[in-house]
Length: 334
Ligand code: SIN
Image (cartoon, rainbow, N blue to C red; front, side, top):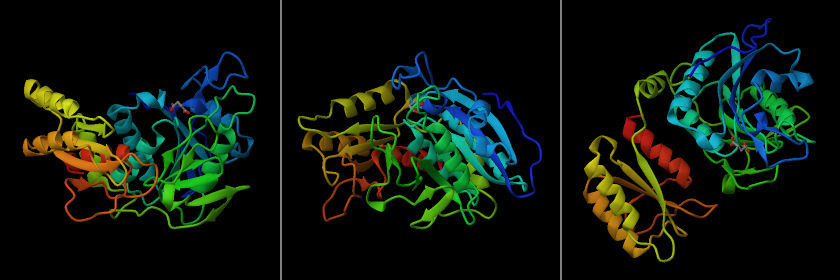
């Protein structure tokens, strides 16, 4: 992955500069017809051109860099590594106050969680996105990008957050909850961190915790950069009429290809993380074979409430996709 500087602007004021990193998504999407909000190709417009669509950003000290140009459904460890590397590089610059990232909505919550979990930044890292392509009759990307920069410049801001549709969400709680509406994100029971109104932030709760001594956790960042791949963790779901076939197939795969064996399984259980008994039986066998098993829930809201006699470790309030990533990073030693 190359890290071409597509449009480094001059005049960066000491300590107040913003870097905008582009990774693709619908915000950079292009459709053949302006009215088409669905049949477009994501990741077509450069981040420099996205910034140029927002008049309020024209006079700000800002560097713009294209890290990737992908539909975020195809997000992978290679792009995450490149992104974490560039975010860390810019956070370490004394002239830079914050990093803003343009990203697709589909896996935005995973990237946000990955960056928070690995970097625990002391400066703000604000991801933003759009549900309508750049060519739409009314694109939502320009306002979201302008709001993201307002959040990034807000005094006291820190950690990885998401700015979309006038709301700001913590990397821990944010989830995409709608397939089509422009306000597609929600923070469940925790609620949004704040709202952006005409460039001002109305904050409801505290920013995500920073870790480490410097602008980010350099040790964790280095561990990720040294890894060739994330430890394989599968995500499966418990449902009516479930059985253990998938779990047994994962174990068989590991026996035939030990280097790529599944090291963990996150299971999105029913309700409070309950599991179909046939699936639970297969998961117990996997655990006996050395596979780490973590329970999460299929429910959109609410953490797992622990009780007596529950099998398997619970996901500590993380959604199933974030619990999968969390276990994978834990297995990596991060
Ligand atoms: C993507 O996630 O890259 C495509 C969908 C979107 O951004 O809304």
